[in-house]
Length: 382
Ligand SMILES: [Zn+2]
Image 1 (cartoon, rainbow, N blue to C red):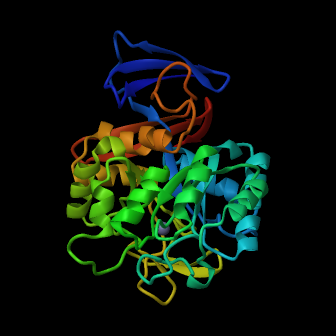
Image 2 (cartoon, rainbow, N blue to C red):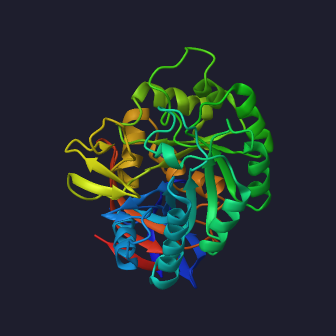
């Protein structure tokens, strides 16, 4: 496979050659033709609960539906996801993970499911921080349950989001971190000391910072400042223009720096579909015409209908980032923070040939994905 374009992270016009799933050569184009398109490493979404009608939290979602959801994400420039399973009854969470592992094995491009992110069930039981996670299934961290997840998912669990407010949290974080699984904190009502203890135990990411929180907080101290101030914590952000207002986003990005910030969608099944009612595990969610997704019959946000290419645009428009900075948050940082091998160095020889090609309109701050390759294989052309 060969492609040429402007590497959006370096600004250089290049020709890329890939073989056997990996980039083998990147040559500078000495006389770049006019109208070259742009190239970037394929986007990595560390938190996606479903897409294009497929619900990753349901054990019954057929592999074909998961396959279609992956194809819909390829069209948004995504090449790797951490399929996300949220709080539910233990046996249902296990069955959902087994279902995802089976789909990964059976689908032709199943390898796009890089791993599983378990968000919950070890979260805050409080209204507000708990968000859309069902209270009756929230429980304290349990390493035995984590082991059952790994067994059911064939070792696919690569990230766990939990709240540091549980006394069991530091020991749990230390144990999973020592096995190479990323510990993230979120949906929390934790003190400064509890957050500090979680970070000392190995937690490295604040999940969708600014969401999964109380509507009202004491101005200071509070757990948002604490996570913003903690330099050892990276942070993920849902940049759909709904979950976070532009001022918070800008300030949070300055506090973390682009290098410690990750774009996620936190998308749910209705993403990429029309307004209506959909499943999220054992609950019903509703996609409204203006793009909000709520637990049905409530005003509580329950994930998003965001796609990664729109998230990249929103980072440029709402937060004033450059194209290269926005792409760094969509491709390189999630690789580093999610420990995705052979995806850390950008478009370089030896890296996986996960590549997205797109048109870029600098004035409109918009991108349009034209082709996507997964391990050198064309998986989207539009
Ligand atoms: Zn969440």
